[in-house]
Image 1: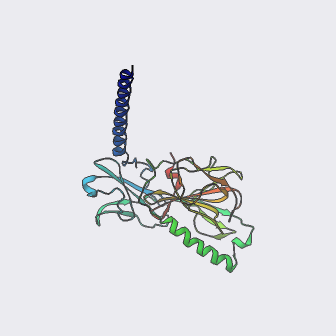
Image 2: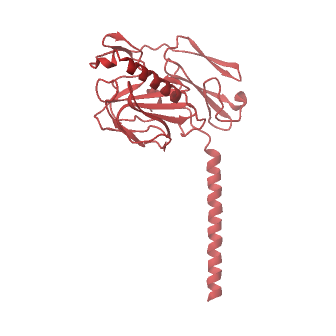
Length: 289
């Protein structure tokens, strides 16, 4: 009886070992495929605030590293033989073409389509946000430098398998990217994000996986979160009522970031959602399906 039990035990051990080997092989195969990312989205949108998205052959790139920097462009390896170059177009660009370079050589000139943005007029009743005190001027200047560092952060990693996003808050967009803004009848900088009105306390969800790189409470932005999605893609969430995440926390798509609020310079409760690619603000709506 003891001999029979020993044989059965050895047989089960062998099955377990074979299962572990098979699982290891499957994981290895997955790891081989995983570095390739679907970068067809956002689609080619060559207008101020949009992106250039063109396909190139591996032989044209002549690079091995997936996170290679090429002239402020996101270089994405889509397959063994094909890459995509995604380059942001500044809203303030007055150029008629944008130049794509590879290895310091001109690869292609892309024509930029003209796009007109509407005018928006809002009234701010708190005069401190119109003509702030010197204390708040100094504060806002320091906070701007902190945010600039976050905007230009580039981990070289990517936390995504594709760049398609969902709205962080369900609702109708009240103020889109690029709107020409007049505050109390004075012309101000264009709107560089997307505003989504919602009740105070409405939950905000991450539209893409990433890592929290900045959490703050700023003069103009109120409570704010910045997320690094990797490869120079950053998103920010402003005017929050409460924040549920911490700096250096890694998150997945759908993670609850915090609550909609009306902190900072606002006319009412809403989420101000902004996307930066290689340090340049682009229209968040091009990342929506």
